[in-house]
View 1 (cartoon, rainbow, N blue to C red):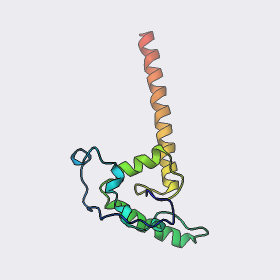
View 2 (view 1 turned 45 degrees about the horizontal axis):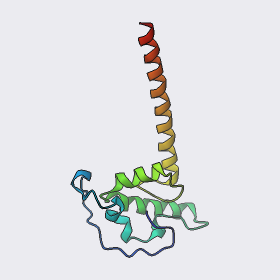
View 3 (view 1 turned 180 degrees about the vertical axis):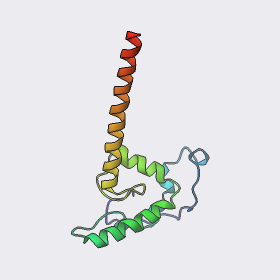
View 4 (view 1 turned 90 degrees about the vertical axis):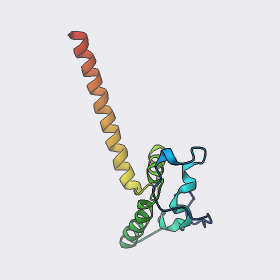
Length: 125
């Protein structure tokens, strides 16, 4: 989601089909094709003191919007690189993004350890 909570979004409709990144206009920002630009921001961001059942229902509805978005992967990567602390971005909640980031950090550490070990083996051999 590209707008702050509680703002109204008035943008032309975006096609619902997925368009491979290589076939898109490379000069246009990825978010111009985001399906969420035509939905209310409230679907993607939690109101204060939202009950758990309502939050889960809202997040699932937001994820359904994301699932049909042609730029879901770009949106997700944006949210992971920023990192966006709130809302549903690229089909992931803030908690789900934290899990993905933790897994990436662990993977990166393991790859660095493996590379150091391989370097030591090469030097010894």
